[in-house]
Image 1 (cartoon, helix red, strand yellow):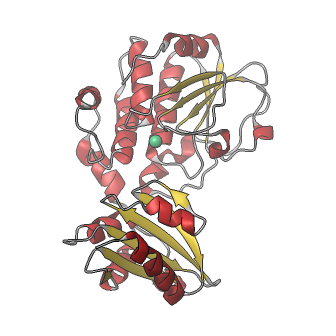
Image 2 (tube, rainbow, N blue to C red):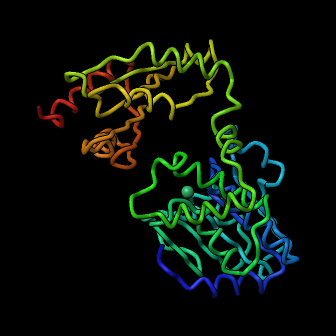
Image 3 (cartoon, protein in one colour):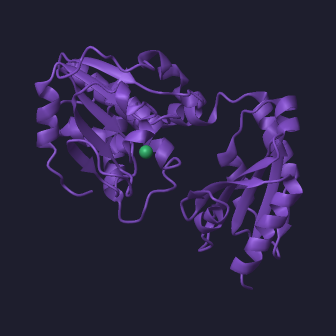
Length: 322
Ligand SMILES: [Mn+2]
């Protein structure tokens, strides 16, 4: 990680009595863990902290934190408070209309490479594997020790964004050195693993089973496609574990890309696309009006399951040269 000047951010935070801390909508443990740890540290300095999240609270591992957060931004703090926005590449990502934010100065801390510049003090670190790691850096720069509760929140965020270390890059050993300090401060890998992978409904396993059972291979085994539809959701529920499904599909020998088609009852199919090679699935998603990253993207296709498979395989035929 680069060495940004953290001092102005520390100074700005400690100058204020009230601090509003926001993350992104549809929150994950990286944004919430960052919010929570920063909030705990500021409370330790006698500050009044307002943790806000627009929700929805969908992931099982974040549910224990829900009670610490409000879905309303306090309004009586205009001109008095400072607002910190974490893990958001644009203001819109917070899920709160700009009109609901009182007039305060704004600190932005984020690890996404792209985005629209907003806020008064910005610290953007695309090489950081998680926003929690930046918050850890900020707290450590203050000279204060990490409490077990802070360490636990920071570690859960790090594990979420790195897929439990598997997205870490070579030559980024410094991130593991920082994680070592979280473990020494009390973070527990088995507890974090259980929080992220446990707590699922039986229905989510049955849905996973149905989708696994329906995998078909295309293009000499280079692409795996499976599907689920509204009848499945009616029968076993809507809770999914897409990450496990994609991992299973991409783990098939010779498979370069995996697509999950979710056929809704409104004549539309939601498609998730994952790739483990140079096949650019963001480009395929954009063709259908969607978007995302080269290796993970999504789009919506009009029509039923068969239409979606036909459209996708037509596009793939032009992209996958033998
Ligand atoms: Mn993040």
